[in-house]
Image (cartoon, rainbow, N blue to C red; front, side):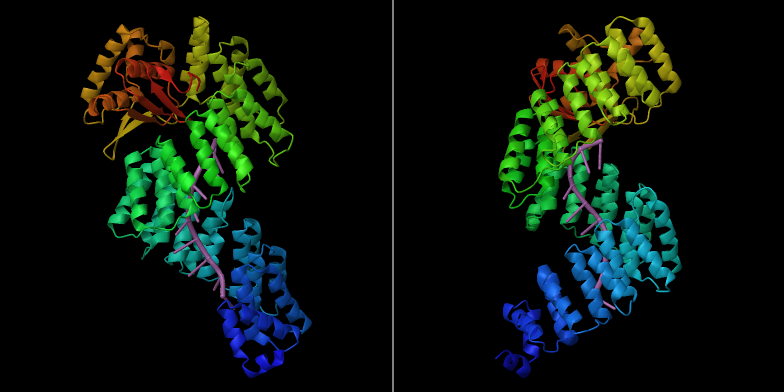
Length: 616
DNA sequence: ATAGGGTTAG
């Protein structure tokens, strides 16, 4: 019976199999089982089917049949076997194929290099490339495109440059796949100018190369540049796809540009794209970082499938908004109802969510769970940092200090900094002094550390020490990132710096700040001069405080929006204590809801009360 | 037969 089918129309099962027809595949497997000659066509079709369906056992049967019948796969087939084993996560078997096939060429080598790259084995990919190169096989554009994706990490840039010069010598620099990979390599190494140069030199562009350069800017936090380039390329006719949207949404999250984010979302809706998880994840993040959590949740709830990143993005959202209860609720749901397992980012979000949301004990429970290994995730340095934060916020400063001493990590500046912050809020001079000096040793260039330590001394009336700290700061600290605040009005971002005069309505804004300060003083506002570490008289200090960028942005928001409309200000650094007080009073006296996003979290201020509980 | 860009955290 079987042989009848096979002998009469040998090609029919093959063509059926290649269309994914069950009968065809069964028939081919049957042919193999009864020992009929398969040769190239049959094996090839079967293997492709197994690759498409990720059918590991069936593919293994096909391979076993080749071995049994002493069939030596020619190059094309050998390469398919490499791809097959790679797709089934069997890198060792894939490599054995490369070593065993009688002949290798650039395609089979490249398939294996690609296998290593895709699975994250960068050094294996590079070594194999070298082996291939030394054996005299000329790499082609496929080889270079895939190889460059393995040039990451510390020595990635050096290797990438060497490969780049090889690419130039072989004249592949203008190849669009090679070029995109090349510019992405530079961007990921932080060399955005070199990335841009490669991009600008490409003789043609497509959506991938455009997306690569846009996301290059976005990933480095150069959000305005990413946005500007996105707009320019769109004007020039780029047809975005879901990856492009996800990348530009990252930039808009950074800028907290809600109107622009909505516009991109509308584009996405009008395009009627299928629900790409990656795109929906970035929409969740965009809405949450723009302060619109209910939109995030709506998208999250509507998703047909979710990845761990979807859950994390949502948890981070609640966390940054200080909604501890929601964090705990969603985390429970994740553990109970989702097939997605929490990862180390999940725990960072949950721990910092408990801390920001005033649920310290719950957070500590989660941490102890981690320590016991109940979740299969080892606590890392950042998780320990969250615990220091948790204890500090709860006023358990001594405990936090002991906790740091017991860690089997060398405490970082961030961890000491978190404890110092706790010492300031809870006025613990003894530990604060120790921690402060420790911190100044590790991170003498960070001006913020001096400010907190000096605040601490000031709160204890130790003015001599305040002066010492100030002198130390002037001697050693460098201002790395100038403070900057902005506000979005009708899709335009208005940015203010502490001491520039670039905004067209700067005079008007300064006048408004002065007016505000007078009004607020009547209501009890006392400028917190301890926030200024320059050695100037009090009047000057007050002037400096009133020049802080977040006050300018806030004042501008009050001028430019209608009464009663909430004001949304974004700051690139942590908000200072004085500006926080200022904003609280504004919300009370002017009956304006103020939403202030700083480097770490949201401050939702209503009627003089901030969602951060004055700890941040 | 082999190829490039993407989402959370820091």
